[in-house]
Length: 177
Image 1 (spheres, rainbow, N blue to C red):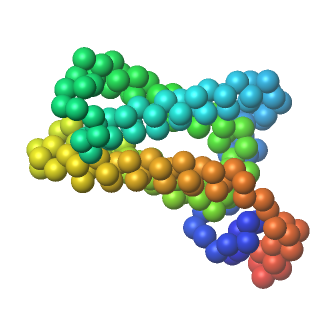
Image 2: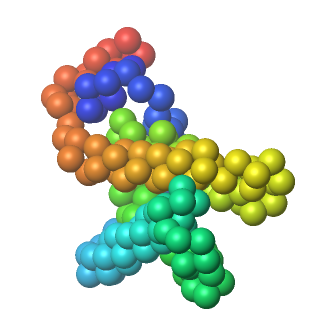
């Protein structure tokens, strides 16, 4: 089925999105417009921290800082990075719950989630897998690329507007009667 955004992409199942959209939890938060604004602000701030701290560490991994330049701040950066990541996940879930259909059907929603999962897996592996530590520069370059692509997918989703929604819905239901 063509999505409301005019592209044939893989999205979350519409039946599941509809179930979430009509759930008691979603109905409880939908009317809280001020809370939505606070959660959106916190999501943007935690994403900015996540991208910024990741970029700082990745640029260090690429050798753009003198050796030892961030050693004193590294334990605090790791803690801040973890707080920003989990804060972004929690606020992202809140934003999704607020508007599951509007968010879940975006063209780049699933690719963004896959990139976030991949970025998290890479960050975890870089700390624990010896051969990745031995190849710090390529790993840092891949990590930097992943987080830049997350920002790109988020931007794409934010500016994407539905094309003729009525026609898309009619086309989707005509064949199912």
